[in-house]
Length: 208
Image (tube, rainbow, N blue to C red; front, side):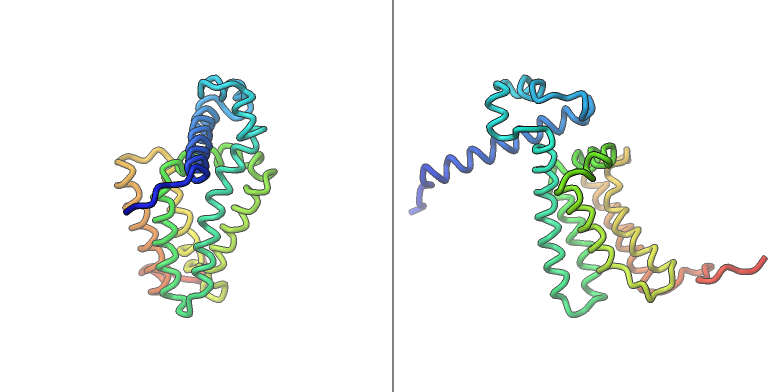
């Protein structure tokens, strides 16, 4: 017999649903109208609630954006912890790219969050969660890139990570098609870095 959820758990689930709805509506408005032009009153109006009701969950706009980024921070932190326990660095790097791509695919709000981050980098840098996310990306690069390798290989590994964020650009195709294409290119970059220099390239510039 399936246990029924307690009243406290039901309330917590309901509260989480409300928070997620507020986050999505606010994010949509931030992207549509711009962060500075969007007020808490306008968010409350779009939600159909009073400003006081919205304030119960998020006292400021920064709190809304900070909460969205913090969710992403938690996901990436779990991935970093996994990667740091792997004994085979070569295998870890390939799996890290695949797992990172999966984490992007599984969050339907993330494309919007990434677009917001790209357009509002100065604001994001003032938020604790934003600075944490930037630090995590640097830690991911440390795990992927070997500074002892020739620079072209280092660049391929770095680009493998960054191309997974290409969904913020107006690419054709469905979300699934774009995700598969980005992962395919990222893995190709990693494979070419593992294989060495591509044909016709050199780690040293030829004299003129």
